[in-house]
Each structure stands twice: as C-alpha cells, then as structure tokens.
Length: 93
Image 1 (cartoon, rainbow, N blue to C red):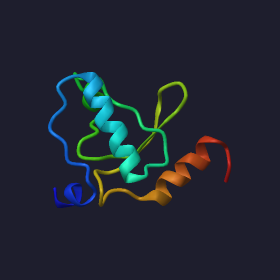
Image 2: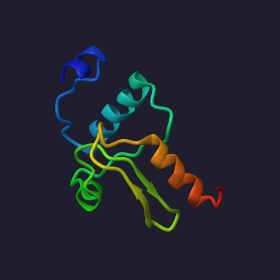
Image 3: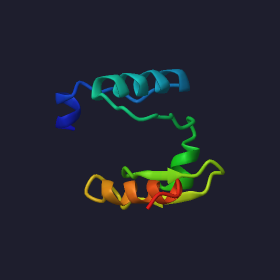
Image 4: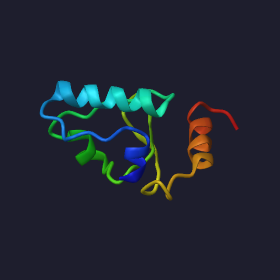
C-alpha cells in the first residue's frame, strides 16, 4: 500500500464501469505503463476466467489461446520467459 501512496495511485473502489476505466487510465498514465492495458468488466469475468489475482503476466494468441501464464507476481514474473514465449509465438528462434 505504501507504494500506491508513493506513486499517487491510491483510489477508493470504483462504483461503476466508467469510474473503473477512469481509475485504470490514471494508473496507466501515472505509472508510465507502455503496453496496452484493458479493463475487466465490473463482474470481473476475465479475472475469474484467468486467475489474474495476484498479478500475472499472460500472452494470449489472436484466437484467444493462452500461450504463456506467469506464476503469481511480482516474484513470479520472469520477463525472459515471457520474451521467449513471444518469440516462439511469432516463429522466431
């Protein structure tokens, strides 16, 4: 929680999808996130389907197949493993 205070990304729970999207956009900007980010529906359908909590990294093919799923983060994040899965997905050694 201290890192949220330090990074100025501490918010109350959103009351609707519009507020959830606004909070997510603010976090993306303040944290300097450089990759595409999406916001789950208010019923957390994606989180429930993919076990996204705690944080995880996924690589999902264009047809919706999970190509890579990290261990829970942040300590389960291994960027080199994700990079290797991305290379494999595009057919590069």
